Length: 252
Image 1: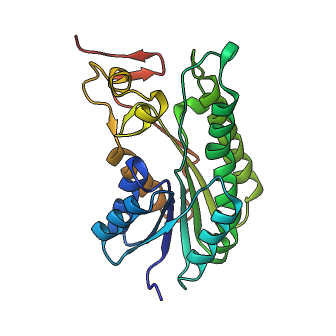
Image 2 (image 1 turned 90 degrees about the vertical axis):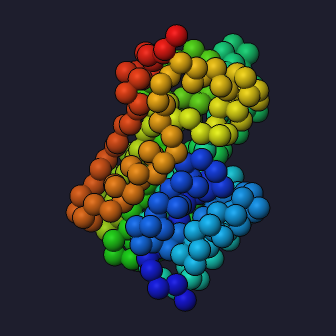
Image 3 (image 1 turned 180 degrees about the horizontal axis):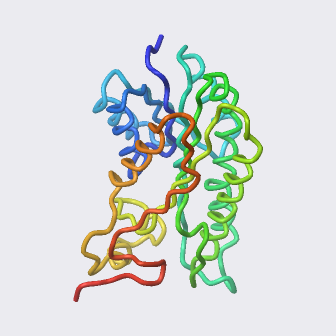
């Protein structure tokens, strides 16, 4: 039996998800770290210690998410927090010849993945009497740019899901929070999107201090630990070098 309140973090095998799992453990939660890669999860949980549980989960699978919910509720402690962090981008194709398969994947993991995990864990979050859903979106949720239509479309849809959920849960004991980061340098996001390390590095070339995963984990911890009557609807966070999606200061 777990004694502490439970926080579930999806996409926890690397980047923002792993950083968030580490941080929430220090904030007094028992963290359920969920992701597809078992080896990465096991390393993370070994690092965190007894205040973490690894659950292999693919948010694009109904069965996998249902199994996650069964494991989480079986731990026997209140489920206080869900961090919908699993997501990602593929490619920079223009709309005219964008890959339908890439668009489908981005919609499934970013939008339907958020839907699946939220639906599966919402009863437990509400039963806790003080639940919180934090969804890690992107500034792509409200800004479009050339080559980014598939990703921005998915993040716009995710934003619509979160906003609607907040309306539908009004009067019930579950907060709904969205965090939208701008430029965050992690080890995998741009590499997976572009498939080339050189191209991934070029995204951040000359940017003095892009955000890092720990910066977003700090934001998650802050919104999640406010008094329960305080709801941070949307937190937009960028590095000081990025004034807007298209306006980034770069050193020569």
